[in-house]
Figure: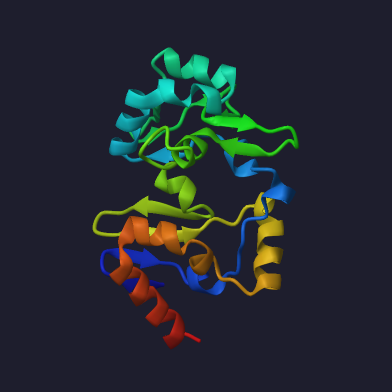
Length: 188
């Protein structure tokens, strides 16, 4: 375990290799699971305010959920998440002709339709954040649907923290990332 500022970072973050292999998993992390992607309050508010701009980027069923005032849901602990369609896929996705799931939020952002990207929890995947009393835990989520991404990371010699550099900097800042790099050099 590595302590950087107010985070507890598991060693897997600097030891595991990973590069998303969407052609293999087809975006399975957006479809499988028992709850939607974690949302920060600011993200939930932006999604609620801007859901109409996402219509052409998500499935019709997903849009129906959003327009019925379900742009986010609260779990039993009061934490916010993206809603799911039939307890499966995220409401903010659309499947392309090749069967690959695409994030409607990310596509709308890239097209300039909205001024915010997909939730930080999605940008950081396969890393997961857990809020503790005095720290945020940063852990690698080991899930079989990402096995091809692990193989690709090994083949390309890219660590998960390198693959997720932009998202990690977005969440924690450049100084934090530099400290993580220093920890990697120290632990090599």
